Amino acid sequence: MSIKFQWLMSRCVLAVALGWSAPALLMGQLPANSGSQEFVDAFVATERAKLIDKVQRQGNEFDLSREFEKLQKKHLKVFGTPLPAPLLSEFDRTARETQALTPEQLQRIDAGSKRSPTELSPELFLANAKVKFMEDIREEGSRFDTSRELSKIAEKYEKNFGSPMPREIQDAVLRSGDSARDIIATQRAVSAAQNEATKPKTSTSKSAAKSQRSKVVQGVRYPDGLPDWFAVADRDHDGQVGLYEWDRNRFDEFSKWDSNGDGLLEPREVLRVTRPPTPPTNAKAKRPGSK
Picture (tube, rainbow, N blue to C red):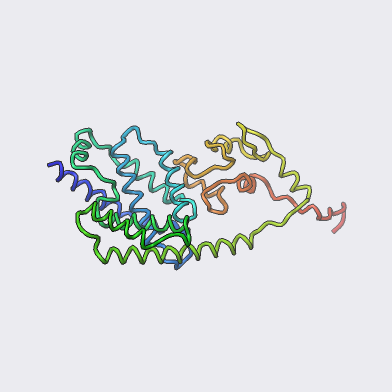
């Protein structure tokens, strides 16, 4: 009975996780036509399955804010970009709609040798392998050994499912490795070009010197003129407000301040909204009565 219950729960988690890939289209963080959608879908499926599992197991002890912070960091490690607000909002909805399991249900699952959510099915196992490839290649670059990693994955597959890893899954993993390399290379080239184009010029103007004035709140230095809510929202006191720190009931408002869409509110972004533009210091003032 316990094995049957575990199988039923695993299929439910799989169906919900894999069926929720549509919001991934909202991400739009990687270069167009880069073939990145398979990795986006894989990230959504695996992280959703893990989220459901944690809420079911932890119940009232589940810390949603802490989980959001982990999701932000994981997305940054895998894709090199912050987690978009619409997707984080969907994760929030999922967590709220997931019901905790009873102690009896948890006992049945554990009695059937509880495994990681990404090891419940070949589909989620493959999705997790794709996400890990993207993350490892981004971190290790040319040092990443595709053959060695595939060997580890195949060994783990056989241990989880009791049979050798099918050739088609091995081929899919290898293809994902090649795709990940291409995506990361393209993304870095685009980012380098954008950074070069938007590199700020040095300025010694009075307005620049004025903007450097700052105040200290709880050991963190903030520029003068920031709204009081900024220091309050900056819960980890790193001088910026991450999306995971933002009031989840006001996710839609975040984009008003986040002008570059990177999922982080920097003081200069907020000041652009709250302060009117400063006229150029070399602008000549008109004399009274002049045209």
